[in-house]
Length: 372
Image 1 (spheres, helix red, strand yellow):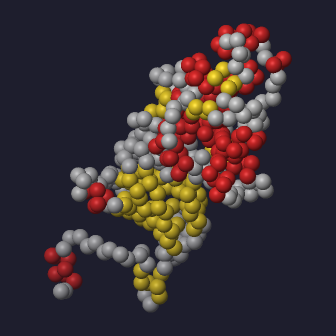
Image 2 (tube, one colour):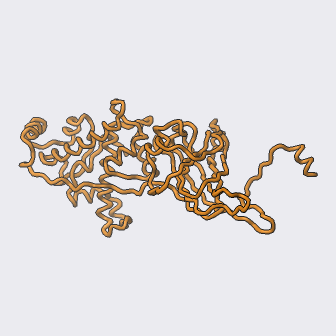
Image 3 (tube, helix red, strand yellow):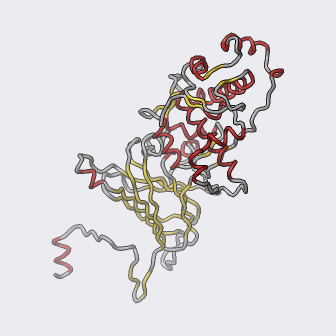
């Protein structure tokens, strides 16, 4: 077929399964390629597009550092060419279940001096995008070729609407050398030292309240504690003395922690409804001292959220279990390397054995709702 006839008969040509590599005269021109597998999960990492400023920041974020400008003698512009391709996975399989393709796209932000941490809402409220996909569209893949000056940039892939779940593949092709990585938190916990207290340190007013609640034996059982805290506490299995009861000092320490966590919860319960949005869970846990990555946040929201909302019961349950696990890991990671080996016996006994051995404070091992 002659080329002129081809142009007459066809208006669009799609080429599949080829990289951007192209022939330049007699030499091959290769592109650098990097691929990321990610996902949007309702309540934790599915924030929607820039039209949703309160949740856009929770989408997965990827940093690209453009190091060298293009070698184009006919172009006086100092710029780096790169191609961003976003593909949603397995949607054709879900089409059989009546689900169509999600509307997807991405935005690119310039950020100098990025510290390799997940950017928060304030950044996106005060910075506009420097590039974006040509459109948000319900196709399997969206791709756009961009040219930007050398520097550091953040790519944020998203669905158009929030709370749309899907897995995706993000590919970045660059003509010149570049550095690309996912922006995510390093998992850490700022655990306070266990509070040391004697009965002499407890205020008289608190002693009187405790005596009224505890009765003649001056100890509070699990069932009494559950009633006192309005079903916030549902299960206790370790205290400093190894029993299933709280003494005056133990209850004072527990009470202090509950007041601290209640203050954090109220800070993110914006409408004072007794629940907070699961999209705020990451920030609330950071306020409590826990920095967690996307994968852990997805698991926690799936575990503790109900219709994208988290009540105080579940918030406390989540914090308590996180504190237990971090303290247990710190105990077995004797070298402080961030990795640890456990025997089958240690895995089986878990944090219960550690708590009894170390005398863990009771607040570090109770939950507000019985769950597997």
